[in-house]
Amino acid sequence: QQQVKQSPQSLIVQKGGISIINCAYENTAFDYFPWYQQFPGKGPALLIAIRPDVSEKKEGRFTISFNKSAKQFSLHIMDSQPGDSATYFCAASMAGGTSYGKLTFGQGTILTVHP
Amino acid sequence: GAVVSQHPSRVICKSGTSVKIECRSLDFQATTMFWYRQFPKQSLMLMATSNEGSKATYEQGVEKDKFLINHASLTLSTLTVTSAHPEDSSFYICSAAQGASQRSFFGQGTRLTVV
Image (cartoon, rainbow over all chains, first blue to last red; front, top):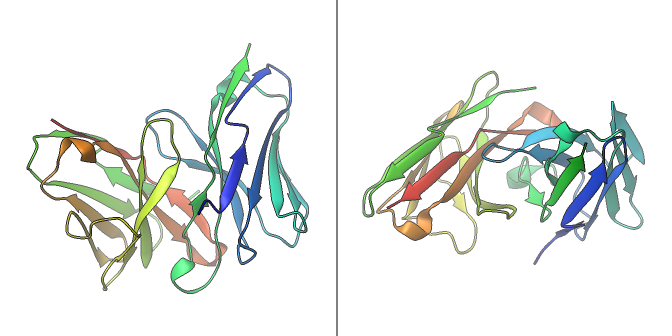
């Protein structure tokens, strides 16, 4: 069962534009929602994360919007740059016990930013 | 952010041999580490949870006798792919969660090619 669904599968944006990636989850026990950036041949790097008690979190050009009632969250990349071209994964996890740190990933979005 | 180091980054081995991959948390202690597998252009799939001082917990469908996990200290987990076959060729990535923050950090990944 796929517990985190991510869309779109791929995204092409012009330099300076806004990139938006969406995720939806099913398990209401999830309480931590990170986004990761992955370049080819590298491990994922943590970008930004949010917990369900806030609706938005911003760090530099990256913003997470969170809708608890809809069980959806999204990543917005403002002023997208060619260097942002990578694969982005949303993920979810829950605290406590054996689940601590255990991530369920979305399918990934390949972002291409054209100069 | 915290650093998780994975070694080797690439390995080529002959079919039938075994390969060991190391994962170290360099600046924090991790009682739990995770091992993921990633096929080209796909998401990360959790293979197993590595628990310091106890047996690993494997996800459904993952052969515990083929993928041996040892977590002998609070900073080191190893994954040994035993009797490797070409179908085991993949990108293996480890992660560890830091403290109470639930923030998970990933190693650089290991590209395994079995010939």
